[in-house]
Image 1 (tube, rainbow, N blue to C red):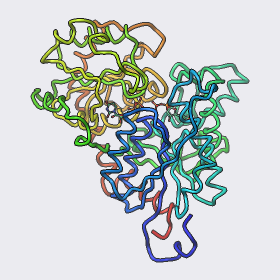
Image 2: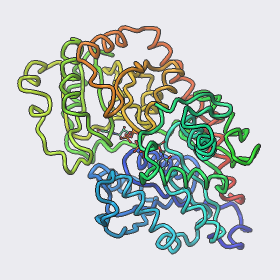
Image 3: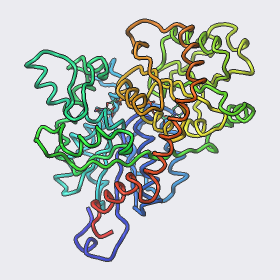
Image 4: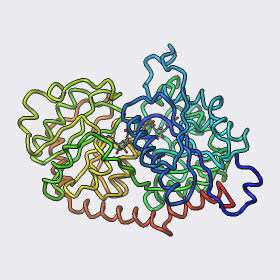
Length: 469
Ligand code: UDP
Ligand code: UDP
């Protein structure tokens, strides 16, 4: 905590500690925030790393981040082993959240000396906020998904109380509208699930945060942002912590740190806007049968494509070969017009490439922010967690198409290759969609430019963290 003398002195750099949690979907926005705070907003940033990480992608990203940004200090915090019986069978990323939550109040305070403020991941909110209060340290929370998802999240404790009286149903989020129960993260159906317990505890804790950061911009989700700022979703009517819309945070890319990427040379050789980029994110693998149908669909579409295939939840366990996953002969048949890889790609760079014409996406929020910022139209195929709510945001925003009947993980059967091929062809040919996506890109650029809504929001946050800065 900064001393009173420090605060009384001349303008100085605010000291902010960032506390991300597990998975690239949480690490990436924190890295982006670290860059924005340290380079654009002149803050001294410290970055907590809970070790060990779940995936190799996270450890490679962290190594590159600290090598590229020597001014950001790394604060390692070693977690107790995750192999206790209570974690067996749990999603490894949720188990990591839980281990981090348990360790935060014990191991984090010694790392916070000299800080002006803490910005913690949403998954740590209910442990980080009371810990910071005890240390008289302002505590902000970064929500790593859309503002619309955040409105559901903040409203969920009230929804549960209403649902207990009225039976389970859709959520009518005040000021935002109806979010169908079929779009809630699947884990919420099980009240005993680790994720559900964390979701509810974190939701209840939010009113005590000093503020909430969301990686969105006002013009993208105007209703949700306004409802949050009015306190419509709050259990204390009219009161809600300040909401800072700080997006879209720019991707941090480290192409030089990775193995030589054959996809870059391949993309360079393709005509403008001719390539369908396909990725379902870093968290989940598609079922084998669905992988096969997607392969058939891409082949039948006749389009060029770059497809990042994931065969297992955690990359370290992903040993299956591409032919085994996609069927004999597929790679040979599409050779030249399709590039399939199991390697990590620098997605932020891929989406900026002029050859890319559309994105078949699982609608992880980071992936969508990258598509929105580059104006690449999205074919939304949400599978899990917050992705259906996010798919609604991108479709309503005009930058994508969502076929709502397409399967949600473990339900509704397999989407057939023919249907995939038809949708891919239709989105590739949709000039109206392309123009609408370009308008969203322009709005996004205005929001982060000097004087834009997100620029001002981050400036305001920094001033509140350190009034003398
Ligand atoms: N989330 C949440 N509470 C938590 C952890 C996550 O509300 O304790 C949110 C998270 O920000 C996202 C959604 O729930 O909006 C799904 O989170 P998850 O981490 O499963 O998704 P991922 O980011 O890994 O795709
Ligand atoms: N990502 C990437 N290369 C890959 C796979 C994923 O750069 O091969 C990045 C992607 O650009 C995004 C993050 O990993 O920034 C994944 O976060 P998102 O919220 O989109 O989805 P999640 O993986 O959490 O489901």
